Length: 151
Image 1 (tube, rainbow, N blue to C red):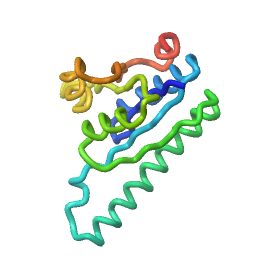
Image 2: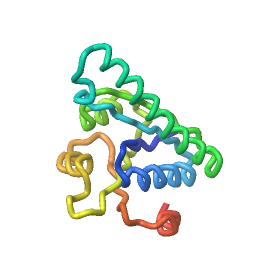
Image 3: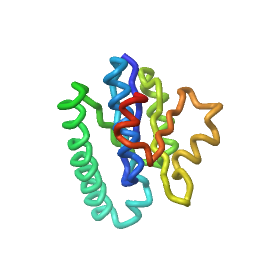
Image 4: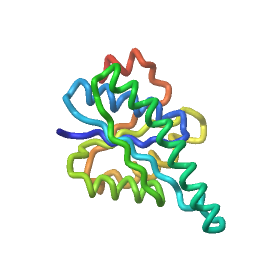
């Protein structure tokens, strides 16, 4: 079964990416892997404090994931997989793709403000010719109705 890889972060655009990945997976018999990356700069404190912050970040990610997982299970009969990695986001996305041969498509959400599409879209699209999987970029302004029509 091919999987759609989508990134869960604090951006608004990740919501559309998650929704699109779930719809595509449901319509094509695929799966969804949700990747959340904890950047190393969050843990530049004393060791005990860093461990506590790391655990709190994981708990926050798991709570957010469970909201999306419940929606995917209830609405689309999909059981998504959560992967939490630590490091630089682009490096960890590429590492996850390399480690899981079932990942066939990376789904990213594009920001809708004047700051551009977002750092992940910018960095990964620059090197898209060398990526091992295609990228689907979901516009942040796309409505649920339009997304359902396309997916």
